Image (tube, rainbow, N blue to C red; front, side, top):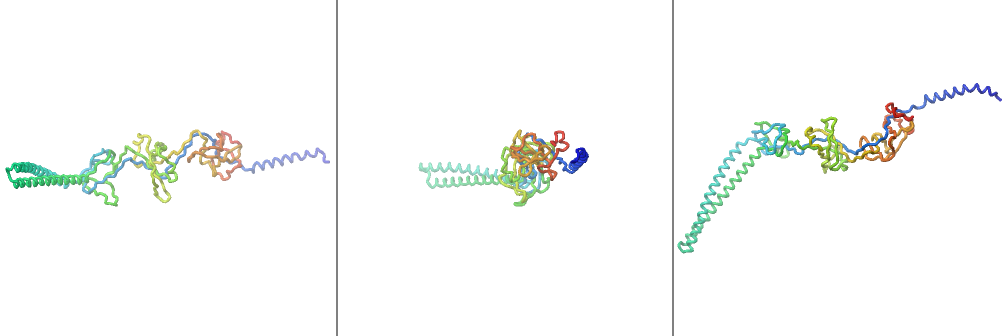
Amino acid sequence: MIPLKKHFHFIPVLVAAAALVMAIWLFTRPKPLDVTVQPVGRGKVEATVINTRAGVVEACQRTKLSTITGGRIDYLGAKEGDRVQAGQVLMRLWQGDLLANQAVAKARLLSAHQRSREACALSKQAEKEAKRQEELVKSRFVSSNAAEKYRAEADARSASCASAGAEAETAERELESIATDIDRTVIVAPFDGTIAKINGEIGEISTPSPTGIAMPPAIDLIDDSCLYVKAPMDEVDAPKIQPGQSVRINVEAIKGEHFTGKVRRIAPYITAVEKQARTVDVDIDFNDPQALSRLLVGNSVDVEIVLDSRDNVLRIPTSSIREGNRVLLLINGTIIERKIMPGVANWEQTEVVSGLSAGDRLITSFTNIKLEPGTRARARASESAKGDGV
């Protein structure tokens, strides 16, 4: 039997060996991964859809005007950028020949009316004389042959009156035709608005567009008192959009500010700009008419249509959700996987119906390929003030 005193010689050796093993384990074990952690909280979540390509600010009324006939520009009633009123003459072509024809037609009409009055006056007198002769025949003062002669004269005068009246009416229609030809040489503003573009100068020839051939309009008139947004939305999202839904509008030219509006109309057809771009145009009205003074027709915009909205619900960043509606939590220094039931969602936030509680420490970083359940981890330095749970 070995004396007890001899066993004490092995104790320092055993302690040193244990310390060595512990040191090796401490230096070789995997270090906890640094992760970004965000406490699960409550807030507002909206389900939204955005346009696939840039939308455009459009005018409620915009017309591209051209003269019906061609000719030399003789008058311009406005300049580009001018505000004009409905009925104002904007452009007129040379009308010298038409005005001369109009003067001749007016003289012809006056002469025709005079002939008509003369012929009808003679017809009236002849009718009276014929009736007087017919009464004398009844009294046997004149023969029936004499009365018939006067009746024939009255009928002839009546026909002459009708013919003169027809000639006067023809002259009136001719004058109206010339007036129509004159109207063809004039462009009149159909509504109040602003002149966006004028193609042509005084003395130049203005030519209307032939059938099937597009040509620049003589005048581009915009009613900028009424503006709206036309935005192309993906055909997949179109069935979710309804008139009256709220919209946030971001104008490219006005940074750091957004406007509000409502969906007015969803186009009943799909526009295929490219094979991979099948969209539905959505018209959006602005809520604040005062905002229109800061916008220009043609401004590029992005829109976000709010499909649904929930207040004071559990929410997490949408980017933190993994495949299969699973998320990662940091609990006591270890990564734990949890399955959730999502609700209303958008690109930034997702409502959590079940699977999490307020305050749970959600891992939001996925930059490390070793970020798997069971892995040791710790919050990044910016999170240390909240406690890393290790």
